[in-house]
Length: 215
View (cartoon, rainbow, N blue to C red):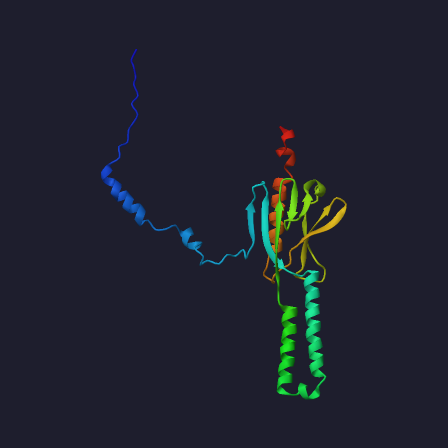
C-alpha cells in the first residue's frame, strides 16, 4: 500500500509591500455615493420618508396640502375682518380717491389674496404594524377590522387636488387620512397608497403564516 500525503499550499506576504498598499488606500478616491449625498444634491422625495420601526412595522411620514375645516374657517374670519376694514374706508369718498385711500385698498386686496391663495402644508404619519394601523400617532385601526378590504385612494368630486385614502372598516366606510396634492406635479398620493399596499400585504396578509399557531 502506498501512502499519500497532502500538503496545503501556503501564501506568504511580502512585508516590503505593506507601505505601498497603505499609500494606495490613502490615495484612493472617495466613492461616488459620498459626493452624491453630501447635501448638494436635492432630494426628490420632498419630505416623504419610509422607515422600519422597533415594533416590526413600517412608518411613513409625508406632507400634504392642508384643506381642513378649521383652516377654512380661519381664512373666512380673516377675510371678513379685512373686508370690514375696506368697507369702512370706502364709506369716505374723499379717502377713496386719495393716494392713501388707494394704497390702503390695494393693501387690503393683496391681504385677501394672500389669505385665500397661500398654501399651508400639514405633516402626517401612518404606521403599519403586524396587528394594526396607527394614523398621526393617535388613531388606531386594527387589522382584523379591515378584513380583506385594503385602503384605496379616492379623489374628492369636483376637486383635482383633494384626495383621501379610505377603507371599509367593519361595516363603515371611513376616510382614514388625507393625501392632498401640493401642486399639479405632486404624486405623493400615488406613492403613499402604493407603499401602504405593499406594507399591508407583507404584514397583514401573512398573519396566518407568521402566527405561532401555524408552527
